[in-house]
Image (cartoon, rainbow, N blue to C red; front, side, top):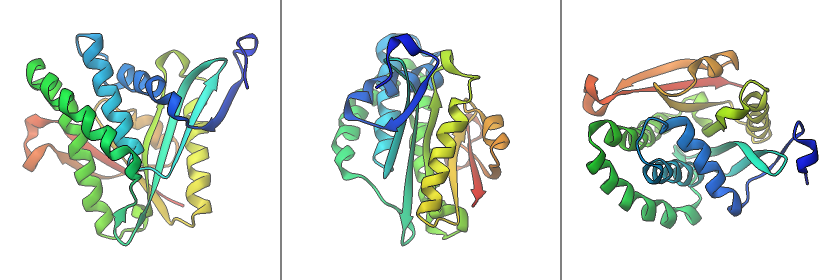
Length: 216
């Protein structure tokens, strides 16, 4: 177990249930930093985390000292569908209730933050159903705390995910991204843009979703 006396050392280990709120806070800082109100940011961070976990068969965190500074979740597909971890279904639905209410109060920008995530899942499911080689696996989450970026943690987490994809004999994998995602990071690590989708039913005012993939 890492200690506070060795803060430079980063340990990569399996996600534990006690890590949930730590990962949710990182997601909130990354994708909801412009949302007013700590409660709303954390609410959306928890939705992102639970939604990613329910689509994942492996989950890894990066820990420096006593602090979780990054996370990476990934899932495998079978017979044209993502394999879900049903243990997280109830938690996800519980979190979606208050998140929907807060989104309505917060206005269009806050609503878009929440529902763009749901559109990402829908777009991912359609992509998986088509049986492309890059649809064998899904990178559901790869995030690093803003205070810890620039130290190779994101790349190391992605390498851990790629290793698991290869062990599972996946031909490739994909990930869903929005305008707030670090597309340059993905491109530096060999992912390429496959599809660009503009909001619900092609509405250009509802935000853009990017689907990136990489063959293995």
